[in-house]
Image 1 (cartoon, helix red, strand yellow):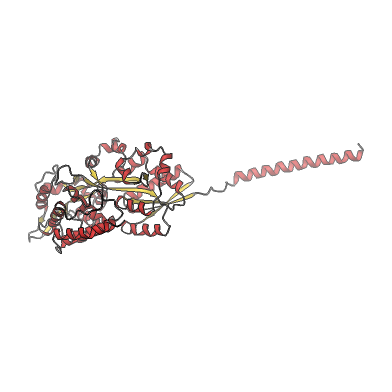
Image 2: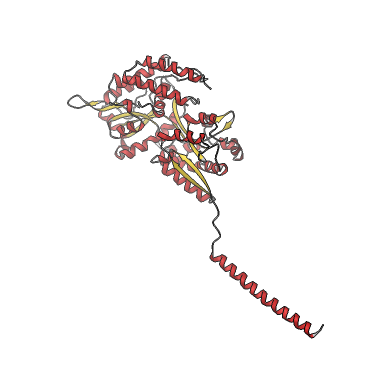
Length: 446
């Protein structure tokens, strides 16, 4: 090897050492930059959730709190709540479903559930349930609630809260009327007697306090409350197969007669019953204008929001039954994934999270929404709650409202008949026989 060659090699080694030094320096600089600059934020999946629960004073804040806790446990998912008032809820959901624009998650009342399943608005959850444990997962809930959300052996919704109808009553008014607040009415005869004693007049003979508040608006919530009267008298709206209306039967007519005559004959109900919905009747109770009404347990917080002063003078009891061991109507609310959800896997994670014991327990404590899991009722914090004790008793014998797809149309016809009886436009018998004739053709439609 010549001297020249050796020199060239020496230069090459020097260049290589210099290059390596520069490379290491550049690498160190890049590492330093990486420590200073955070990695690009990971893209999150946004799950949309439309619900009328978000519009309520107690349920809304608790549901939002659970969204926040879910996001902490699942940093790759955000939950966007979309509050929608109940009055516009079904119209909005149906319009979105037909346009293929439903949110990922949706709240569904038991009255709408089967109709939405039939129309294909909701996703079959069965594959997710199987992965979550199958029967073990479903066994966490009351079986009747699972059955009501199923069709042909497939599950389409997870229960959120449920409970039978009860009565609220003002214990102070009971005492003033000479009634024992520990002995609420247990049948219709007692109810009428109590209502008369609880209806007060001023010096001029004008009523200033009434025994009962009637829900007379033609809206699903008011028709549901009337169904409680039907069930407590051993009456029913439809035959067991759902193909024949039973409003022309004696027990059904007897129910409408007694209910409407509280207003038209006995005068134990405030004026304007035809326009009174749940909000109006709760407001009258909060203002101490009425002594009793039919309601659902979680409506109490809305009453107390209107007038906190009546919290300690308000009690609840099972609805008075004219027929011994008659079942109680119950309300149930579910959450489900829409059939056109863009993020069904992430939406299921939200559903599964909301259904856990700790979240069901927190929901009851915050709202008094009826538990859908037996282990919540068995929990010490709920078991020793006097309100929960009444609800647990009522829930021993429940009967669902009709879950036929045509229920919305049928409900409106029943509401029309209720209003005709209240206004005296028709006798109770004529109103229900006319309604029966209108409903039967609808039931034959698929």
